[in-house]
Length: 216
Image (cartoon, rainbow, N blue to C red; front, side):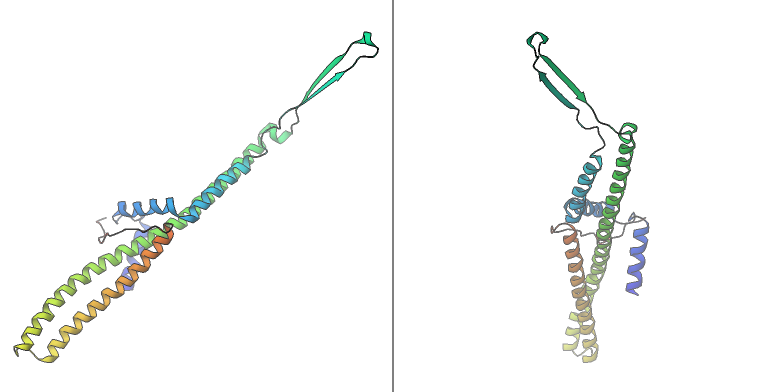
């Protein structure tokens, strides 16, 4: 039942864009991931390199200048100096076809980066949702454990006074132990999620202590 509830909450939040969460906290984590994630850093560098590479060759080459000094023979002819300037070009460059092709390649590169970026951030966002879910569940279980601890302590006194049987006392202890074990399991799962967020954040620790799903 817990798995079904968790899955339903996560799917709804992903489809709704996370609007029902403490969005500012998640946004803060996502901004940090976008800044520090090693994969996204490499993708940004590759994008810049591809844009520069796509622009290469769309401009006219530098003109070529030739200089010749001719000695006159016989002397009365005089000396002569020749200059020549040449500029090579091709039709695609002149008509802008290469520029349009380069722009199209740049657009594809940018869209590919955006898609890869979304994949990384969506993974981080889902971990944030999981973490908030476990924070809320731990808060609820901690309250139950506190109540169970109070009952167990009261039952221990009543057992000493002979007011209850050993069986009733053992039941209170089992209930307390079960809740303690459940909280320990949650702590392990939370630690695993935090480890994944740290990985996505370039090895930097992430703090996300929200434990409530805000009203939509």
